[in-house]
Length: 276
Image (cartoon, rainbow, N blue to C red):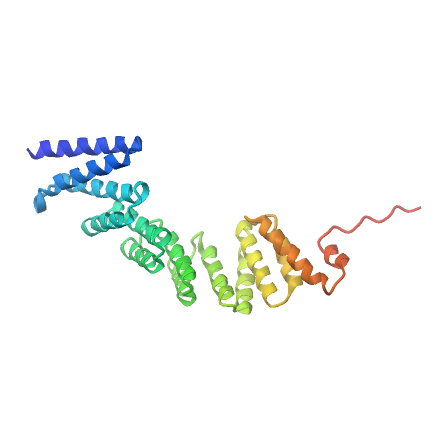
């Protein structure tokens, strides 16, 4: 009887996969709910195979509710149940990540998203994705305007993964926190030190130079700002934004200096005239 029941569940899960492929999400949800009720009737006497099937069912239900039916409450309920009953599985790790995204992007609850990131790092510290999770946590704190905590978590990142490829990206967030707090001198010091370290990463260097330029503008040093904007123009992911900054900064400088002096620093010198 047990073998027959497991076979029915397995067949049902296969049918769910087909329904998802066919984009019949409502029928998939109905069938998954029936399978969940069927397997849970066994109670605490479920076999290891039945637990594996239940884990799959809870994972599929969470996905259907979160992605396709957009019923975030039910998605959260099923993912929380999955995490409670199977806390060390890869499915639980993925469920935490989905919950963080739901709270952050769908429910506008940054505090809850931060809590999910914290739990990921507590429960799965050895996952290869852990450094990315730590950096994501830093960015959430910045978005939540908790700049001191963001800097503290950057330091945690650097202590735990001192040679990680994202280390300089983590340090970049320190400068951003100072800039967002209007602590421009500290931002400039942080960005300049980081720029000296990022010589082998032109994409990151462009981001640093742009924010360094913004910092110089904020303390009324438009000439230095312009130098940084020109330095990052070729590699910045949003060159139109950089060009707007350049135009604005040129306008500021033009109020006190002739335009020819502004442009001459960023153009090649004219060739000498041929001798008569």
